[in-house]
Image 1 (cartoon, protein in one colour):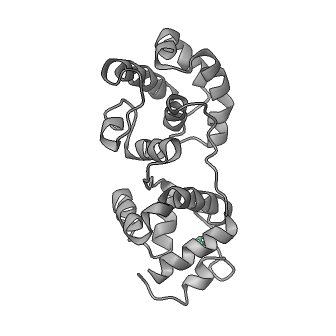
Image 2 (cartoon, protein in one colour):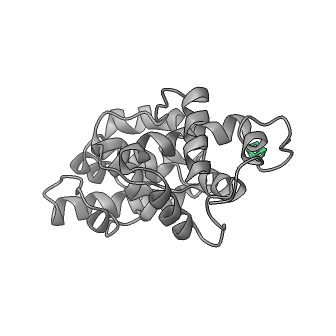
Length: 207
Ligand code: SF4
């Protein structure tokens, strides 16, 4: 617990007001943007979504636009064929099963094509303010390096972080860790002696 608290203090110092970086205007466009961000940078997604959302910002309009046109707009992104198909399938399912609205539970969100646990959790937390701790590769890496989880699986990391940090801080913390990791905690070449977090953690007991 001591480690978790200390990490939270340092993150508050370095990333005091974290913001999600994906451009969107509604829950539906956030859902599409998060789906598109799989294995892509937020920056790359933000380059294609203005065109996509100017043509289709609702499930109805997306279905009318169709898979082929969607693909043409998002083709610079990795997994574009799969993502185009998922966007059409997801929009159809929203209309058929959820009256065109984005559902508000993790379980319902995960029934949508192309939407896994992480995407669903990001939409819940960033779009609806419902506490969730989406674990991406950065959070998984940091939690393991910081001694907060054993790195055995993403799901285990999520459970450990939810146990260690107060629920009221999950939404902010998940963004803080991602932003800190991108700026200071690279996958390779990290220097524990000069690092703002690890240099202090060495003096604390493991959780
Ligand atoms: S030393 Fe810094 S960069 Fe390396 S794991 Fe610790 S926080 Fe991350």
